[in-house]
Every structure is written in C-alpha cells, then in structure tokens.
Length: 142
Image (cartoon, rainbow, N blue to C red; front, side):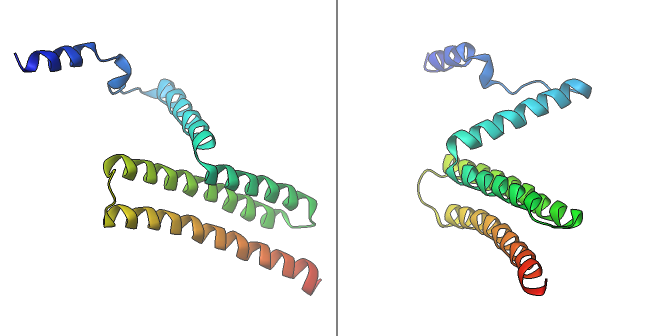
C-alpha cells in the first residue's frame, strides 16, 4: 500500500518529465536548434553576466567595423567575442547544475564555480589584450 501513491504520481507525471525520444537526420538538427534557442533565451532572461557579455560583444563588433582594421583582425576579435559568449553559457550551465546537485555549500561545488568563473576571466583578459594591441597599433605605432 505504501508504494501506491508513488505509482500513481509516476503514472500521472506529465510527459515533459520524460526524456525525449532520440531523433535523427533533419529532425535532430531542428530539435537541436530549438534547444539552442531555448538555452539562449534562458541565459538572456536569467543571467546578468550573459547580458553584460552580449552587450560587450555587440559594442566590440560596432567598434571593429568603425576602426580601420584588417579583415583578419576583425575576424579574430569577433571569434573571441563568440567564444566569450560560449564560455559564459557553459559557466552558467555549470553553476546551475552545481546549485541543483549541491544546494548546501560544499568546497568542491565552490571550486567548480570558481573555475568556471576563471575560464570567463581568461577570455575577458584575452579580449582586453587584443584591444590593447589594436589600440597600440592604431595610436602608438601609426
């Protein structure tokens, strides 16, 4: 009798609680695109750091096309901006999973979150170095 309510709960659980079926071909591609859009929307809605990085990358893109730079320089800096956004998404996903798996503070959970943050910092520092080289080339070397 004890298991009866659990069985009823399991039977009554909505379909969204089940793992989706494996898709192949174009259906897989379209489903993956939908999941990606859902992830971007969630990051934009719930993650201030993602919104800040997105603004930074948008401003950077504008500056890259206003300044007299080579195509290669523009592409490298745009690629770094895209990588920054990807790493920020991974960091946010890592933090969400850590918070779910370890609601209480734990040293390993804190370490994992700190490492994710450090990965974002490394990319921000790389972008900063790229901009330092660009500004040096434009205004110091001429």
